[in-house]
Length: 42
Length: 245
Image (cartoon, rainbow over all chains, first blue to last red; front, side, top):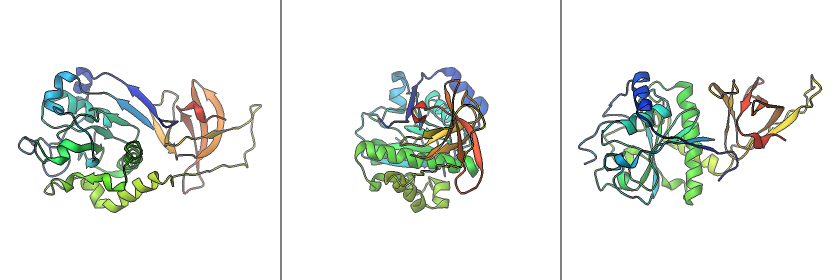
């Protein structure tokens, strides 16, 4: 492990998921970025 | 460098990362959103879409959501595609609007990519992009606009350890009874914050950079460093206390 790498482990919670939706609109851009590519990953 | 591990629960493995994986390379993505790394990973884990990636990286930290020994649905090359089954997927945040936050996120991604390459004993040839597996999708869109070779050069410079800056300033007069100390940064970039709670990042120290240190306050090192390329200084707080000399 490098000397000044700080690793923190936390647990995922539903509250964090709700917070992410409240704070951001997640674009499902099929041309760029993260997309909901149901067929692409099947 | 700050890394947060918030790994997807095993109950969602069947949706997000159903197969064990021996990684063979790294795949770079841009999110095309304006969310922080924590929010990107939280949203990825929380929804039930068959879309996933290992890490999101913003201007402050790396957040890992899937273990590297599990596959993710990131490369759009199908259930048996090499991208989806062999690549460690890194998403660079803030690419929708770009700007300084994105540039800092890209820089941290280059540093983290170099860190992973060293961990696995890989060379720069193991850094791929999403478009290598699914050309229709122009991802990572903003990184490609700015130049893919430029990004690879950033990774290479971290690999070579060229992001070193021994910036010491000996012309400091101490204005109190406390002598001015030295902060010698470690081998990765270190965030500098305006507050001791470390919620407002104002900059970062390069690997191996040295600067003035005014002591430890509320378990944080108070540093003064010169902003690269300018004659200006910033004063702030660092988490890693090992640098205080």
